[in-house]
Image (cartoon, rainbow, N blue to C red; front, side, top):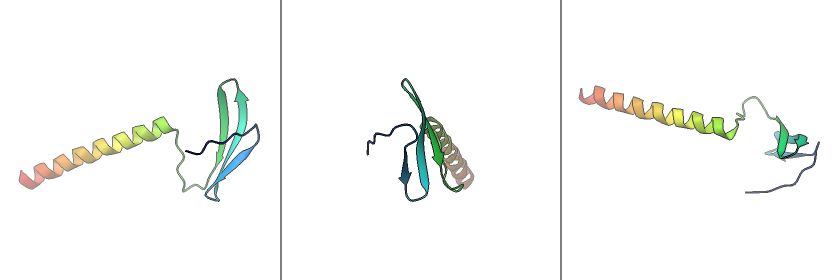
Length: 72
């Protein structure tokens, strides 16, 4: 993991097309602004994990249904 220090209104660039800017700092909370192309998905980690879990569950259910249909 790369750890960087940034102050308010400072930014960093990822892969030439994603810019993350520190918008505000209040106590222990930091507000970030993210500029990215529309085709680049940006999620909070907890939302991303929920999406991945739902996809795994759907794949498992679909796989079981396919097996039932194959042998059923």
